[in-house]
Image (cartoon, rainbow, N blue to C red; front, side, top):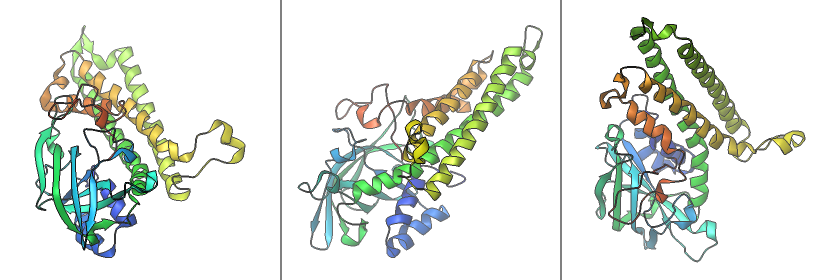
Amino acid sequence: MALNCSAPDTGNMEVLTMFGTPAQRERWLEPLLDGRIRSAFAMTEPEVASSDATNITTRIVREGDEYVVNGHKWFITGALNPACEVLIVMGRTDPGAERHRQQSMVLVPRNTPGLRIERGMSVFGYDDSDHGGHAEVFFEDVRVPVGNLVGGEGEGFAIAQARLGPGRIHHCMRSIGIAERALELTCRRVLERVAFGRPLAEQGVVREWIAEARVAIEQLRLLVLKTAYLMDTVGNKGRTPRSRRSRSPPRARWSGSWTGACRRTARPGSVRTLRWPGGRRGCARCGWPTARTRCTCVRWPGRSCAGTRRGTEPRAAVGRRRG
């Protein structure tokens, strides 16, 4: 938050930069970049597996010079933040079109009549209120001007895919930050804590763990840097040279692979911080249970698959798509 690089704001900035009109950029992008407002991205729905954007059921219907939005979303990150002023909402504008051309995105100001925030939700018992939480949101005859359409009608799926690539890199960067912080606290802890007559830092296995963590973090930092470079120079769909194609994945898959790798690295770092004798780092006040939760959620296929029925809390296998 302090660096203005938290989700979903970073992804929404990318969308407005790539697909927003000059008026949309002036109204929403500039305040977002300045950190004066926050935003949310409304895609996930409780009734369908929303990691597949073609499943989205929210309707966006044009009536004259307006779009009318009706739908039910949940786990909408940041929507409860008092500074949140706009939501990018994904819905279906043309159910009869080709499968990947049915969806569109519109900008919905948070104070628009008909937009109702039902409740805040939790992930593994944490509400993540520090950055605006996760909300269940209803859109009931919400009307916005036609000028609030992002890109063109039928381009929602393509925009979502364009948002996903940079968003994965952002998640990697944040996960590396969590891992760095965990390792820093671990090093402080083992210097202070004494067991069996000497500091933990003098125990061989402790030194081995710290060395392994340091190597893994440096490794992933370089891999993420390379992926970001490839995104800038080759793009989402770039591939490796033909001579290496048989043993290398498409560049587009790299950011997703490193997301999991970064989370796996951050996760052991935070867990080992909790395991030192005394366990003080495991208390709720230090924030590490939350860090552990955030680094575990990526393992599950999608938050939209985590709930049961409307009105129920998600099962333990709660995960998060980007952004």
